[in-house]
Length: 230
Image (cartoon, rainbow, N blue to C red; front, side):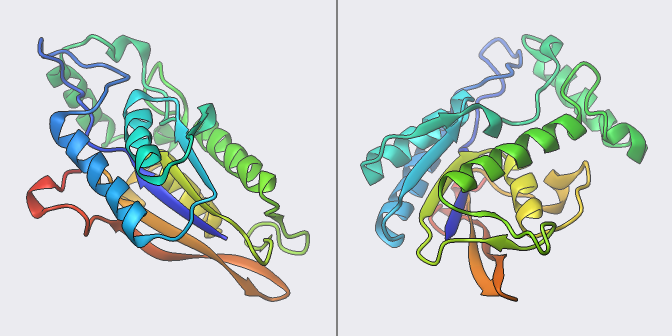
């Protein structure tokens, strides 16, 4: 079984009025990035059995480009969306939001687990992502291995190839969860992926069960150097 985790292309966080939005579309560069990762999947990946995107505009726009390239209908999944930002950030001057985010990075560990004040906690976010991931894998026959559910899985021998178009936080939590790594509330920093990048996880038979291996991470070889953004 193979999972290709795609991060959405560059979002237009800052509007023409200089204010931030919690649900941006793509920039012009982001649209070019989305087209490039779509072409990469079309030309260099075998048949894809399922395409899933989060509900966020930036994810759906990136997924739409991939869907057109692959001839698939994307399935929109609410659980895949990025950690919820405080409602009050929507419409605030972007410079103020950036300053708040910078200040939040210096918090003690215990406060990181709570997320941004007024937003979704990391505890809830991690539970949402891991529960949703296990649910979608179960649809395709992959479940936790009873003998070692923290690390091992039971995966069909002829498992499918799935493309999931989500976010830096969502994809990093999925990656660490599948690899059996204990969660930390800074998963974004542990697995920092670039816009319109592709990461590949593949199941491997081991110990009478299956494990997940990270075959490649944040691959952007399909992007020109001046189109690579974080």
